[in-house]
Length: 247
Image (cartoon, rainbow, N blue to C red; front, side):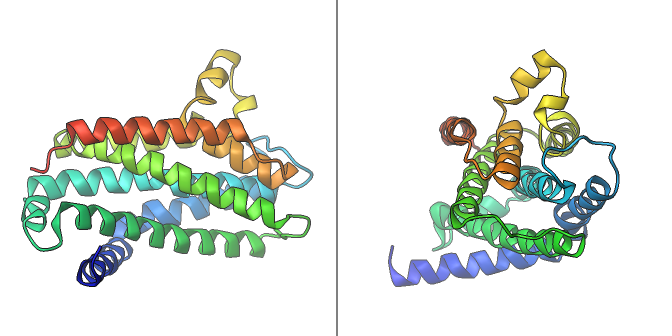
């Protein structure tokens, strides 16, 4: 990639990041709801959580929820950008289709970094401490979150790049609620009924939630969860490459 192309991608990343952080609906989805979920999980016992204290597992769950929110926000944004011709217009500029996608991915990672910092700070205020966690645990959490982001963004390209905007709005919001309530993000998979638990473990939401909770409470890296996320990311990227429509 040339220096000019890099500058264009960085400029698009800054624009997309600012657009997300200035959008009230996006802020509700990416910051307000995860913070409310964190307080509820820590201050109440409505959800059984593993570990000696609830804050570590609660933080792991809301970090997984934050990653999953990239699916809803990107699917809706892509669908309406297709309708309004934004994607078609930007694809004809020097930025190109590849630069546009790289800019969007960069914005997702920037917002996720801010989300993680805010949620960790909030968890610290609620009593969470990082003592006992090794550098490997932090690196493992970063790897799982990156794999989860790849899977959810690729899934967003499939949904947002093929369905009508109104349908995407309904599907993306419904899936976010289902993943939060029973998809393994906030509620441990072991708390779900047996057959449902077996299915949820193979979903990207279940794999991400269980993988992060395991690291937070035991320090063990869940290789199986990482494999599930990698498979979902590769499968959704393959489907998106064949079904995505720019307008």
